[in-house]
Length: 175
View 1 (tube, one colour):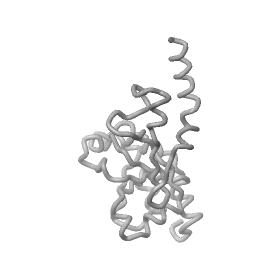
View 2 (cartoon, one colour):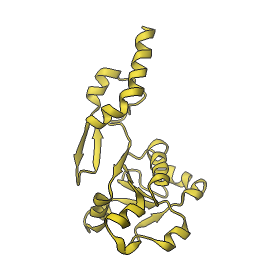
View 3 (tube, rainbow, N blue to C red):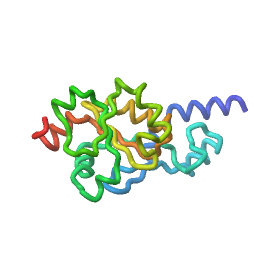
View 4 (spheres, rainbow, N blue to C red):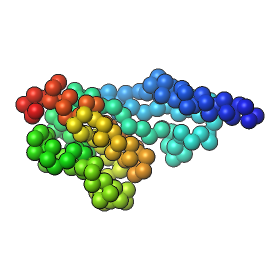
């Protein structure tokens, strides 16, 4: 039995990313993805540490391309349904920034100041879809992982390539 347990754990570690990519389904602009855990539960068992006991989905950060991000930004009905977090520093915002006073700036360098407020719900709404953005997408991925892993957010997106890729592929006027 010990051998099976180790084997199952090794399979989980090796194949989880592949299985996740095959079991996603899309909705609303093709950007919201949810994993179908019934199939995975049958393989791994209901006590798997990769599965949330409160829902049938594994919370994870979803990669959002800049074209889909643009669709959110430019749609007057869709944009208010999202929280958009820019984790760049104030000096970076002076160089390039998105239009709108609904963009929330939470610089990664000051995470120790705002992280507790995010966890207790006084800064962000954990039930609202959240999009994270930075210059190239790496710092925002760290914040997105924090939101999912530590603050209990269920629907979090990271803009791939960040504001740089957005300026190159979507709106050169900002960069």
